Structure formats: structure tokens, C-alpha cells
Length: 223
Ligand SMILES: *Cc1c(COP(=O)(O)O)cnc(C)c1O
Image 1 (cartoon, rainbow, N blue to C red):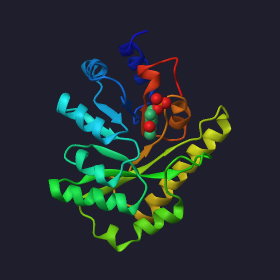
Image 2 (image 1 turned 90 degrees about the vertical axis):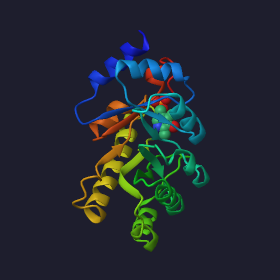
Image 3 (image 1 turned 180 degrees about the horizontal axis):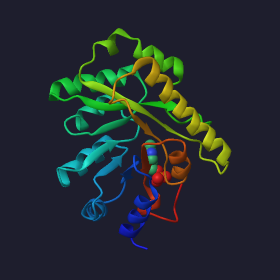
């Protein structure tokens, strides 16, 4: 099966209200062009420099998602065009995004990344960290970074029960923030969860954005 067929099958699988971010990290621009011609518009990258280079090489109407860990000093590379920064896990990073947004005259949509997996290595906030960020004076004064929801990754495990529980936890965190800090804010609506190995479970748990790479570009090599 070719990439366009895999893409069509995946899109048919996703219910209304769940959008696909095609994760094109380490893929050449030609692979992105193929999916672009088929109609895909949202692409995700995890390195700021690669994201900026691909943005420069490809059509203007692509939505670029920064899905990886972003260092504050790299925000400048993506601020002029990025559609959504998924992995905000510190006030310091959000301050950098706000500062760069002001510099380029944009409001930059972001998601707060939570740590729900068992693995130590995964980035992300815990509830206390999120509360501290949202209650800070610095956050209250931001005009060029906007929080549109939450993002997270489940543990890489064949244990479906565990993955389901972690996605449920992420959804609960989303609901908590929505109720306590973003009630009435329509733009706070995104729940970014689900990758090649676990997106069906993420969709069941309420994902609005799945980030799928290897299942599209390199089937057989998932994980
Ligand atoms: C690479 C990556 C993905 C996509 O992973 P696949 O298993 O290739 O689908 C999703 N989210 C993040 C944060 C990633 O770094």
C-alpha cells in the first residue's frame, strides 16, 4: 500500500472532530509534498530548525505543528509561522513564546504538555506545576501566547489498560483546566494525544488531534 492509500485509510478511521497531524520529522520534503497534494495540510515536526527549513521549502498554506520539546532559544525560528506549539511545559518557555509573538505581531497558540506516562524521560508538567504557571503574574500579562488545550504521551507499552488510563487522566486534566481556568474560552478545546501505536485508544478517550508519523510514512517500523 502506498502512502496516499495509508493516509486515506487513516483519515477514514478518524471520527469527525479528530484532526490528523502528519508527523513528518526526518522525512524528506518530497514525502510531505505527496501528502499535501492528496489534501493533508497539518504537519508536525519535533525540531525547530527542521521545521523552519521545511516551512521555507513548502507551500504557504501548510499548518505547521511543533510537537517536540522546544528550547526557549529556538522559539524565534518558528514564531513567525507556527500554527500550534504542542509541548509547553514551563513558564519560562511560555514567556519566550509570548516575547517572540510580540516581536512578530502574532498570538501563538500553544498546548500545555502534561506528564502522564510512567517513563521518567518524558517531558511535561504535573498539576501543581500547571497551577503555578497559570496563577503567575507573568502568565496574566501575556498577550501573545494563548493556551488552547493540553498534550501528552502515554507510556510505550502493550498494556492497553494502562494506556487507556493515561489518556483518561489527560482528558481529566483538560477538563479540570477548562473548568477552573478557561471556562467560557472557546479556543481552549484541544486534546492532543495519540501516536501511531496508540491513536485508536486516544480517539476513544476524546483526542481532538492525533500525531501520527511512522504508521503513515514507515509502516512496519512503528515505535
Ligand atoms: C515522533 C512523535 C510522534 C509520532 O510518533 P509515531 O509513533 O511515529 O506516530 C508523535 N508525537 C511526538 C511528540 C513525537 O515526537
